[in-house]
Image (tube, rainbow over all chains, first blue to last red; front, side):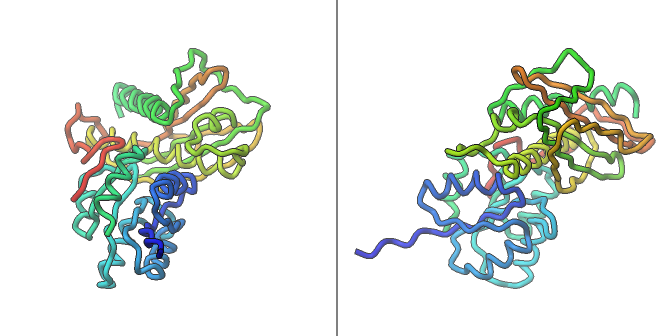
Length: 125
Length: 179
């Protein structure tokens, strides 16, 4: 019998530990995870994995911020999977900018694994 | 900045450190001693800068290997590597300044964060980055181990902390907001 394809989630964070925390939760729940270490790498992975079900992205990263990733994706007019920000940032104007540029949700670090997983299950396409 | 405001800022800094380490499963207690402890055991030192029109500076976190190992969020069968602990130390200082930023925001002070960095070594002694910076070291006991933190900042002349409620963060730690 053909095995059902696992949903693929792209996790973008410059902290390897933060990425692994998210990856551990998602892999245990049956997702495939692609990791990217900053916004530039994240954009490349999104382009390379157009079947991704979702993106989870940090905000404050070297080379390219999470907000800049969103802006670049919006400018490219590409079909973008649901985009969730995972960050320590909670400034209302920054949250609003992300929302205006297509983000679907915002999670404050440190995250609660069960809540993050529930969010992924709700948003992943 | 009024000295009363520096006291408030330092209360925020200490409160954020205690909340952060509690959240990562490692309760810390403010130490009664104030002297710099330069141990011979390996230390990890992480640093993140911040900028803004009202306040600019840096936060520095110094912890021994056992402190970081005990708070490390991923369970490994093998010992955690120095690379992993440096990365975790950088993430901790990033999350610490994120909390401080959100508290300052509600007091009418906006700062922007840089990205963190971390180094490891022994007998690391750090001097103040700027001669005109206010710098208050904070020391914590973590069981028999110690953790120290410094918040140093230069303020513009007209910075006054509001009583609160200026620009409340959109959400708090561990919260999730869906659009």
